[in-house]
Image (cartoon, rainbow, N blue to C red; front, side, top):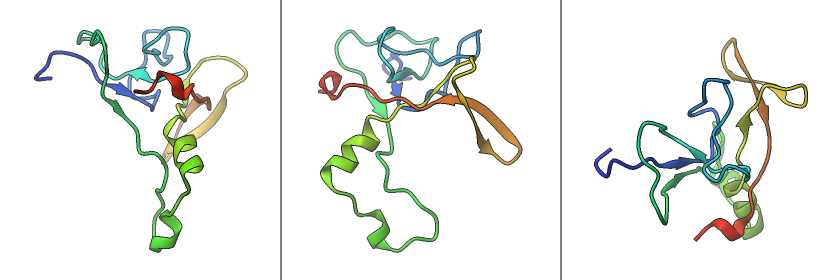
Length: 111
């Protein structure tokens, strides 16, 4: 908000357009997605929210350890909201489902 520019997110259900679909930052690439459409898009780099895996509940430390390939795979995962027959209904909260398409993006766009 302080910079008056949007951030990116790897979570396509953070913001959806009027068609209830995720808005990709680069239009033709699967993620990252625009986190706030009311702010301008930075001209060069965009801070992008991702958790890069290693998340579980009631786990010991060994369950959080990942190798570099698995870490990168999780960082580039960008599920998006779509309204078509190829998407999978996923429960995102108790009693709430959403149509998500599980896609990833090319690591070459990350700098």
